[in-house]
Image 1 (cartoon, rainbow, N blue to C red):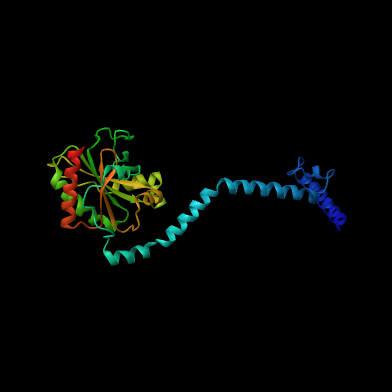
Image 2 (cartoon, rainbow, N blue to C red):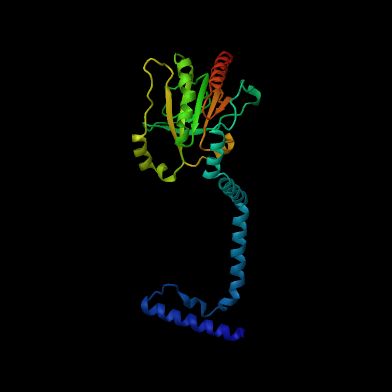
Length: 278
C-alpha cells in the first residue's frame, strides 16, 4: 500500500514539474528536487511535529494575553448596553452616594494616566502633576486641586454640568485649581487620524465666563478605554463620574450621576479642605 502511494506521488511530482517547465523555463516551484529524494509522506510527520511545536510555543508565549482577552469578552458581554440601561432606570445614574469626607492620602488611589485632546488638536496627559509629561500645554501649571468629570455617553453630559457649574461659581477666582470635562470616544472609526481631526473641528468649545479665572477644559479621549475603566471601577457607561484630585494625582473624593444639593456642598467643602492641606 505504501509502495503504491509512493509511486503515485512520484508520478504526480514529475507531471507537475514538466508542466511548470513548459509554461516557465525556470519553473515556478522547482518540484524536480523531490524526484531523487525520499517521497513526501516520509517528511510529513516531521513537518507536523515542527508545526505543532511552533503553535504550542506561540500559544504558550501568549497564554496571558489569551486569558486577558477571554476575561475581557466575558466582562463586556455581561455588562452590555441593556444591562446598563436597566440599571440606569432603577437608580437614574446614581450608582452610589458621593464621598462625605476626603479620602485619606495614604489610602487614596492614583488617577490612571489618561491621554486627552483639546478641540484645537493639542494634547496632554491627565493628571497634571510635577512628574507628568504635559504635551503642548506648558501654560497649564501644576494645580493644587483638579476636578475631573468623566462622561462615556452623551446621556451623562447634564449630570456633569450639575457638578462643574457650582464648582466654577465657588472657585472661579482661583488660579490653583483645574477643571476638566472628559468625553470618551471609543468608536474605532472616529479615532482614525483624518476623521478625528474633522470631528474635533465640529465638537463644541467651552462656553467660559470671561470674568472667571477658573475655566472649563473640555477634552476628548479616543480609543479603547477598557483597562482605564477597570482601574476606575466604571461599571455603568450611561452615568457620569466625578473625581477630585490632589496635586499628586490621587483621588481624594468622588461622586456619581446627578449632583444633589447636599453632595454639591460636600464637594465644595472637601475642595476647600484640600486647598488648605496642599
